[in-house]
Image (tube, rainbow, N blue to C red; front, side):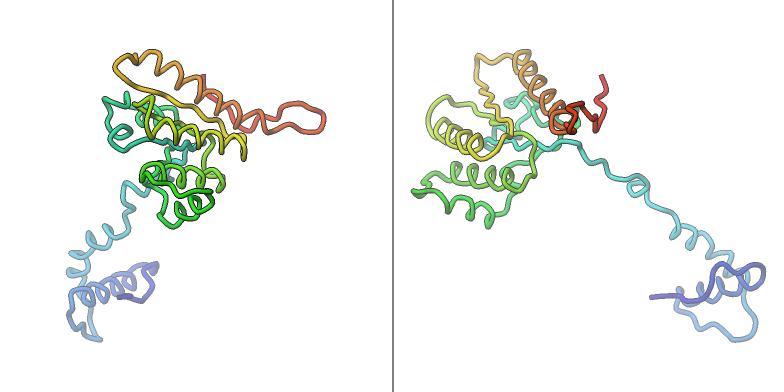
Length: 222
């Protein structure tokens, strides 16, 4: 409910308005004659509190410079131990993440409908539809395929997606296999090389003016 009035008035006029607003807030019927400064003073903390900006709204939300699509089974991607904390590392590199679960069923169905044959596997269907939607919408700068199986559905779907992406776009694609023989040092090295390449592409490669000299759009802290 709007309290009306002008709180910018000074002196007694300001106290009178605050008293009127206080009584309205408290559901009381205020008289037309004299005001009650004491009631206004008691209500000051309430109105001052309403003017305070919450802590989480005092800063502009940070938007990562890059966005990466991460393909994989949920039990692989969201498990910090199995995935070697892939999502956490991407966050440290200031890279946003898009997963299959973030894409609507309508968008997935639209992308899958283009296939010559029906996709029998649920994971394959959602993975293909989600990635193709994100790539065509220009919402990702790179694609990371995280898999723990070298055979089966994963191998077929990953190869299908990679071939389709390379045919339609120049979005970088990398497959990272994790199993009992995988070491975190090698995993980190490949991930860092891939993300460094994404940053370089974003900052330099696509900004070439006519003379051929680079125009740096951003600066990477080293």
